[in-house]
Length: 342
Length: 163
Image 1 (spheres, rainbow over the protein chains, first blue to last red):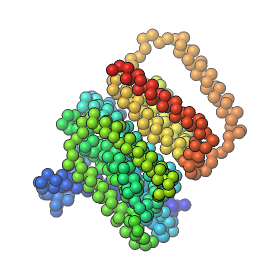
Image 2: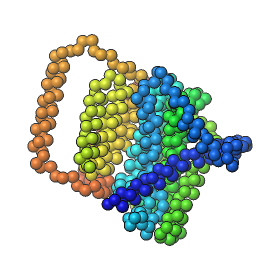
Image 3: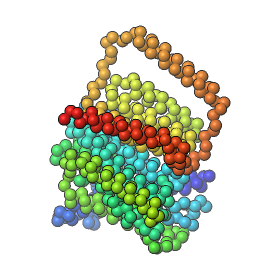
Image 4: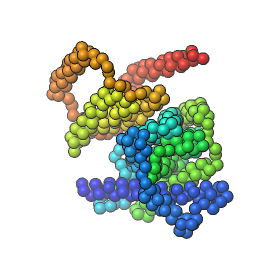
């Protein structure tokens, strides 16, 4: 009993610290990557290659004065960043991130290295909790009592609702093929061929919707600094602002990990039999992190390559482009299943 | 442990439901309704209906109430000032009717208590629900989707007429 609790707690600590470590690494990658794409150097003064820059930034944010403007509605203003971080940190627990056959800790099997292996609804839990992430942004926008913030919050609520539909429909195709809601089953079922091959259309829809769901360029209409100053976080300072930054990068990581699990074979490689035990665990973890890293770089690459969409273009793309494509993908998967192709 | 979670979720659900109908700020009303739905989802999960819990959060707390909040914020609904004419008769009548409903509910659930089966073990409820929906309850399921389609077309017609 206590050994099982200890193992679950151990997994939670590992996942949470991994997610929190990715935030500073990604801010560094983003700034250096932006500099590389724009043919300049980027932060290179603190530590070798500027690697300690995120540490300096974190210290600055921690010690900055936490200004609370007089006209905000206090409770919600404090609640909003907390909601954002809570949702970001709690969604990863259903994603299997390494192979753990034959590995035991305190005599308890690790069960496919996933924090919550007994949660039958799997991906539904992730979708349900991430659908709450919009409240962080909307509440920040409303509680700030500022026109720009409110507009950012409003835009974000309409945007997230629209793209959630497309994303869920794309995920439905994968679930149909796997016949189960649990992501460990979905990952195992792709041992021979990745879902991205037969469901290329669904993968495309999922990726585009992922950019919109995480509020990243070209869909960061909620921030849109040239028209809304900084949108929903105009009035936030020090760690409240940092909380939103953290949740953005953690959400990027989670959605990349979800894309890897749903479409790119999870922690496995097609046609490769990984050994059991600690060696297999290390190898599969490395494969998983490499795939997630590639997708995270895609987020950075796209951010510094594409301009922002106009709001009507965003809505047209979501409703008239992605949702019909996702439905087409669903029909294609159903047809393939009746023919027994996969 | 389960009892503690149940009483906590139940208390928060009732308190936030009261706040949802009594607070004078519409945004706070919507927010406390979200908390209520979340607590109901917790109770579903305690009963072993994890799929229902997930669907409750995904659809009600995560989608429908976002639209509510969107409309409330878009219309900029102001905080309702305290009523000048408190309508004493309606208040007494409303309180009486509410007490009647509460008493009816109390007796109904007391009569149920003997015959309630214990909740089943949390299992594969998603598959079971799916089989029920496209099996014995196929007709009702299709009927509901037709109703939703009608509502969709109705909304479209109402919007189109203005142009």
